[in-house]
Length: 254
Image (cartoon, rainbow, N blue to C red; front, side, top):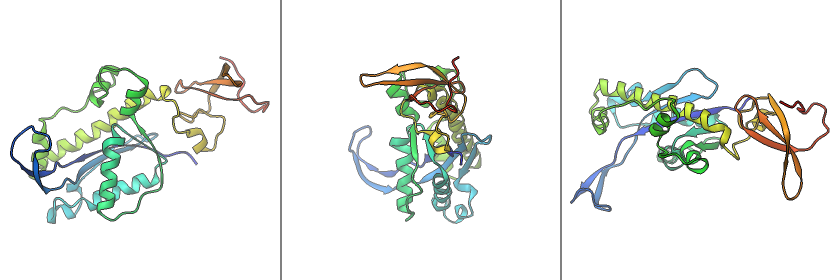
């Protein structure tokens, strides 16, 4: 069975509270209202369509516009199907925020998955001037985030403005479109990438992308031994395997 790889991005409301002075850390006196999920966009890596779900899409919105239970359940269902999830700043924001809403609504954890955070990947393996999604898209020349009028967009959505919600959907969707392009550009460089070949049940395919077109490129030598070295002809990543005499194992040199 082929691995299911989910790209996703969430948008949330801000917290509402009281403060005595602007721009001072720890200055919040109390929290009047906690945040909740506004929308999320998602796409299967091998799929063609990027989908967005937002609070106004559900019947509960008219009665209780802050009730995100149906939205959260829909995201839970997708994560439950995924073998690998990909998000930008997901480890610090999207995944933790999502899990917090699961706990809030009394949902159990979805089926375990592997996670790739493209922001952490950019930070670990590269030295970009900025690891923000928009800046990476600009530097790599694969696209930009959708521009909008700042926090006014969130304020207008909270007021129920239809045009604002439509813009929020497009903004959220573009983040996932851009995320996929950045991930594919960075993927060949990711060491210890979740082993897609193993998930697919194909032990001789590329671990990073799962494609079977790999060619032997000599050997990799360490202090304790020597391994055959391969490069994927689909994504360009490198990997090595123990030397084997299996006649079905790739031997062609490029």
